[in-house]
Image: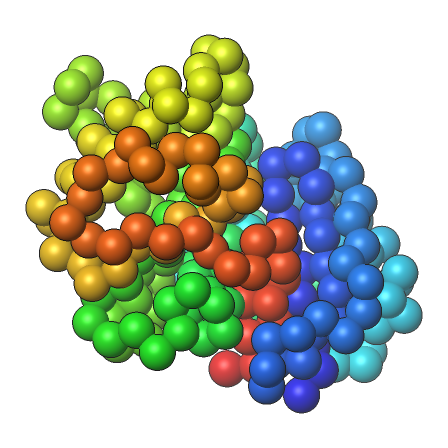
Amino acid sequence: MQILGIDVGGSGIKGAIVDVTNGTLLTERHRIPTPESRSPKDVMDTITALVAHFDYTGKGPVGIGLPLVVVDGVPKSPFSAHAVKGWIDYRLGDQLHERLGVPVTLVNDADAAGLAEIHFGAGRGQTGICLVITLGTGVGSGLFYNGQLIPNSEMGKLYLRKDRRVAEARVSTYYREQNELSWEAYAPNLNEYLQHIERLFNPQLLVIGGGASKRFEQYSPFLDTKTPVVPAQLLNHAGIIGAAMAAAA
């Protein structure tokens, strides 16, 4: 089954046509910069342009991963890390369906990345509780039990004990870059966060996704968790693959 998957991020909107039976991309990934406003209307226009790039209008379902909470196909939080509030209750899926003439499925972007990693990547075959933590501009999470997604876990919003700030404020790779921290200097923040997740959920596996997965070897020696921690395998393709999978479900 071939489905167009789209991953909406803070800096870029990426897409490709995916074979959802084996999690492979059937086309080259195409990226368009995210509009500076990050408003629903401007993002919708950019998604439409991406669909047109693949000549996909009217040809099949589209899955879209968004950096916000999605409940029953409707956005229920601001655009993460940028606090664009116009997204709440904005019926993006319905409007895109009318515009494109195809079914449109919306899913949280970290949940989408998690779906791909659980079925085709680092979490494949994992039983029990598995968490996919995406580290980038913000911190996202995909929570799974025996391979089944528990959506919208939003663990980047957990508070940490050291200074009572949400994890996203000290664990995102954006924080690391803004504070010019080496990966070794950044690792204690991530370690505190992962240990906190361990205490709460007792997972069998922790998968690190997002941009930080590419540099795993630079900070992993400084992590001290009982739970195995592994890097994501699908890298930049995970969100696209998972979005397409959500549309196929």
